[in-house]
Image (cartoon, rainbow, N blue to C red; front, top):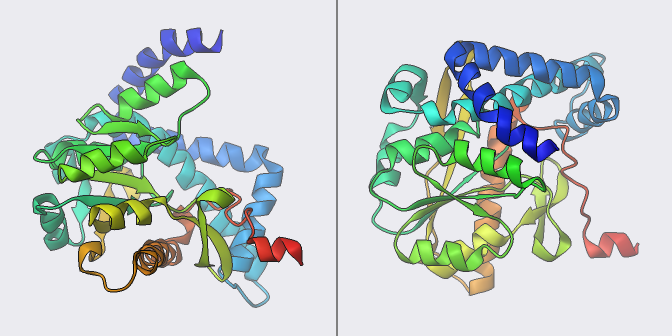
Length: 303
């Protein structure tokens, strides 16, 4: 029944919402996030406590500051999900009118980089718009985005259609390594979200926001194996449906010293520090409701 409803009505709803324009879609998304703040009491409390602990807020107003950051993060995250509807509209005109590229020289290098690349980002700001940017503004490379597959096939198909509308390919994360390596061997670009909790089997444990966290080592391993450059990229939400696009200097894994294991660890540390930097810069745009520190190191579980 749910799949039928999604197949029947989702395309019509998406089309109607896009006609409202980016500003209204973003405003509706923020209101939806505000509604989740009111309804999801346990996640609301978790987010406040996570902000308080991991940003190390102090003083008599610390609880109030944490609650304000957490509340705004719900609103920004609601907007992020609504922005998925806008991904097919990310044309060159959309980019010129709405996206300020903070580091244009790095963006030009990424687009023209002759070798393989892995773009790393986080559930921060307007991550859903990034699929549209990859499809529209990097026409000379094979582009793919590693995504989690939803249980509902109809829902996954709709999300895939929106994310891939401008030309990027979606790769479901399970058993994705061979597909990623084939694309990287053709000097393509693959994008990954690297900030969420991961399973013990896929993790390396690193400091992240003042606590040890399970970091997905997969992108680091694939980058080192393919000799790919790792490009941190973050799209930050601004008012009225506008954005700022930040890029960091790439890590060229083919130039790294050390053993294979040392390179993989250094690469994972590199993108974890990049995510941490931008979470600290824009704390109200990160997904604090996610249980980021859930998977614990084995030695910690034994004690």
